[in-house]
Image 1 (cartoon, rainbow, N blue to C red):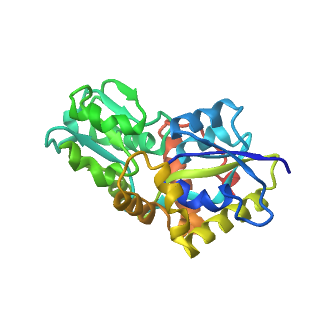
Image 2: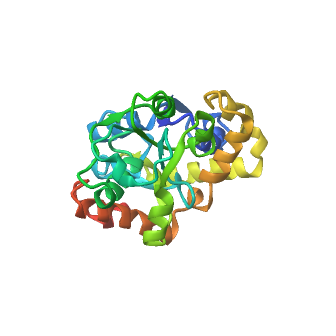
Length: 279
């Protein structure tokens, strides 16, 4: 096989998982041509076609991707205590205060935005006003500076939002877990249907196994792409988002994905899909 094209984010969980494969440390795995891409970019690639053979996308983008890609049962982000946060510059705790307001989100096809829409439908009477898509690293400064009224944040923002003098209105991961008892599906790895999915699964699992066996091997690679976050924040990010579901979704993981996409389809937020296609 020639070089395999892959796109994943520069976030610590992705660089930690894919470091060994990216650096040619996995016997038998093809050389990778890596694009570091924000989730909004890969979600659009998944929907519009023309993306690389392997990608990290949002689970919320799966309905648009499944015609050309299949879900790989490892390498993604799914867990507990790791959901997106709704932040404001004041100490507002009443969701009704978002009615008619401007809210920034990291992607219109992100799991974060999907969760926000499901939550807001029951908690924001009349709905929010304008939704503005921004790269996730720009959202907290925009909320702080009053350019928008609230922001939906993901990733390391969970550990750093207090540095921007922002306040938590709602932890949507906690809301989801309390409502369903299930972990929250965030990011998925998909592979083009022309590839051997079992083989891709093996290479991803081998790369993660290497990372867990020698965590220090990936440190310089992780920090090189960590977008100026501190070492401690990067490590906290990895510990939160890389877990047993990263190695294998298992039945609980698939159940969480079916619940999320099934609810969203019932609400008309995403197009309906055959949930049996996920496996």
